[in-house]
Amino acid sequence: MNIIKTANKNIKLFVFIRIFAKRVFLPLSAIFFIENAGFTIRDVGLLAAFYSFTQLLVEIPTGYFADKVGRVASIRMGAISCAIATILYVVFTNKFGIFAGAMFEAIGYSFLGGAGEALIHDSLVAKKQTHDYTRIMSKTMSISLVANAILVSLVPMTYYLDPRYPFMLGTLAYLSLLFVTFFMHDLPRTIITTKFVIPQFKQIVGKRYILMFGLTFGIISGLYGSGTDTFNVALKQFGVRPDLMGWIFGISSVVGAAMGPLIKHLSHIKLSYYLMIDVLVLSLTYLAAFTRSPYILGFFMITAISFFRYRKIIYQNYLLTIYPSNYKATLVSTMNNLEQLNSVWLPIFITYLATRTSLSLGLGITGLLILFIFPFFHYSTLRFFAKKEQLVV
Image (cartoon, rainbow, N blue to C red; front, side, top):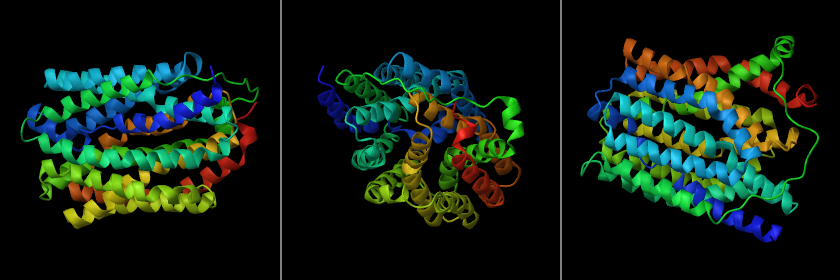
């Protein structure tokens, strides 16, 4: 096997992983469940919590699977599991079927989570170009977003032909993802003695900034995804037709593609400034719901979705640079796990506020809470990334 040739092929094909791993039905999920499966807004929150709880259980094991069995095998498992999920949504359109589908979808995206990034990092290690990780990932993201813009804009328009069509097209996307993996291959990995370990409970308690980082980083990360379904329901309440919601995500993909060349510069700015940008983008999106304007909310949703597509790349770059490890997928999955831990309760919390007050007020209050959390998030994250010796053995 020509290692360099294989590495180049993996990098080129990774763009198709990005394209076909997209949830093309995402803008309509909550609306479909409410209109066709008898869900309430609180049920939507419970489903999101169940999804995150499932990922919490399997995120690190699936990352470890990618490290020990293979990155490509993990991507294949993810594609198969996600395809099963969309089939369940279509065939069993009731609460049991939807929750079962959400379980398979959560498992599928856990398999996909750290494997693709780790495969690209392995490929760059083989080429001795790890310094290009952020640039390559951003370029790949930009290219795939153009295709995503088309898919996520057009697929929801089939909703009024048949509400099941977006999910059926999702099945085709996941099967296409599976097909692409048969042209990708794992690369031999160099054993690195330095490895990442999860701190013991006593160590976490002894280092309060580590505990604070885990809590605040997880909450901020979790809030990017935990409010998505509630935002979509709010847009419908504010007057946006379901078949047009895909355009918000489509425009986000176009804006995201345009942002791609700029993202590599974010990895070079001070972490302190990046944290401020991160929280500002998130908080303004929630606060925009106060206005009850679909245009204002839509604008900030586009901004947040566009930024979120690159957000993890920046943090992964910081993490993989500071904590070099042969267990890259496990490392990335551990970071994802902090997000999933808080995503178990955040959707319930958001939908509780929405049902006790209103959708606009509940989302707006959440935005104010984000601003309250920021000082603790800022302080603990800077301490965490500055103290690598605490987590390296």
